[in-house]
Length: 388
Picture 1 (spheres, rainbow, N blue to C red):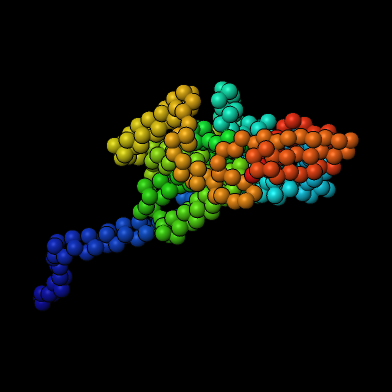
Picture 2: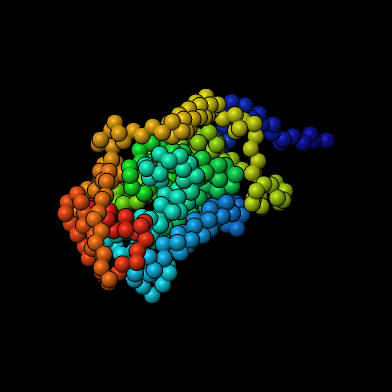
């Protein structure tokens, strides 16, 4: 019998070569997944739905209600005897542009609603610290401010949650108001832009801290700086306040470093997970919660010292504008229609049967008005305009 040859071949794999191939394949997949996980900034990595971001919309509604009440209290048609812009709006019509460049209420109406003024704070009217962040200088200010807040707030609320975004919104806005109180001049100032700048600061901290997760980082930073610069330019006009904006941005940045840790999400059960948050639940492990403890602790300490220091300064009645003459140009640009200095407006009043004449005691300017029944607050508004 013939023996059949066994054609079976046994191949011995090279363990070194296999290890190299395996390592190459793993590194490639890891790199691909890392690139895939990167997203453009302002595109939330979270899957929260728009209707679940209720905190920002709640603040927007509050601002809208307060603005409508302010315009109703202003009542330009009655208090200004029809000398209004957009008279067809009736009670809700605006003061003339020469009086309020933002198309809004008069100075006396803002004072009634809670604007911050040096003489009023000297009377210990601390309730103004809580109302001032809700006030807007006019409809232009209202629209620009709220659109920016909605744009940034929705992103932050989707990315990091409602509670943390709401905390940053409120604490940064109040911190900015405290900064205004220690720099305020004797003219009404509203601080609603502080909340926007608090969100801007928090967004900058979220971008810089989670830099590796995003793709269009430079474009995002330029967008944020453009929004900040544009609103600071508006803050040079009357009634708007830049001190609150700067203070709120610093506070928002520090709070963002504390609260906005890395947003790594994984899908879990679909259920209610927190205030106004439905859908895919965010799951953060202890490694994320303890991420960069030194940076977070230092930021928290800095914010606490800043907040407490500002609060003590306000309660003690400290006003830095007395010692820093050039600081007023951070918040005001000189113009013939208004002054960046504190003016003691005093006018001589001469009334007839149908006319009222106001003459500024400081510069001799006068103006004749075709009415006589006018409130003391409105008389002071007109006197300030004449003396400016």
